[in-house]
Length: 148
Image (cartoon, rainbow, N blue to C red; front, side, top):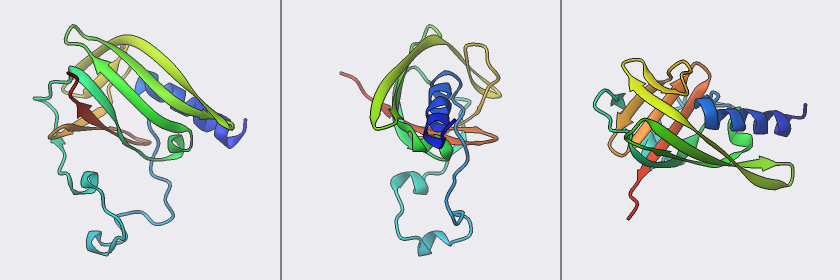
């Protein structure tokens, strides 16, 4: 399987289980002092904490994906309903083109994090209108969007 095909498969899995991969940069960000970095986004300045009071219902979109999955994943959006259901769509690079992949299911937020469709939960942290989902392999940062 080619690298882009493997990344596309991983990105498709991300829609279902929120499994991102670790950052693949040449120099980890913790090696270079924050003040010495060339570019810093607002996400870099956020202080994430426990998501025990998080109301996840609503629309969330990708702010940042790190790691191998970022080779193929271009965008992801989740609608989490307050009844415990969700729907998700991801734009994934496939060769020279892109395609949307969708998924529907159930979600639950507990003390161990967010779980989709009864899968093992992933660590879930909150910073304002941002949520960070962390697995042993990486992170996905989502931003809450207000729909009118």
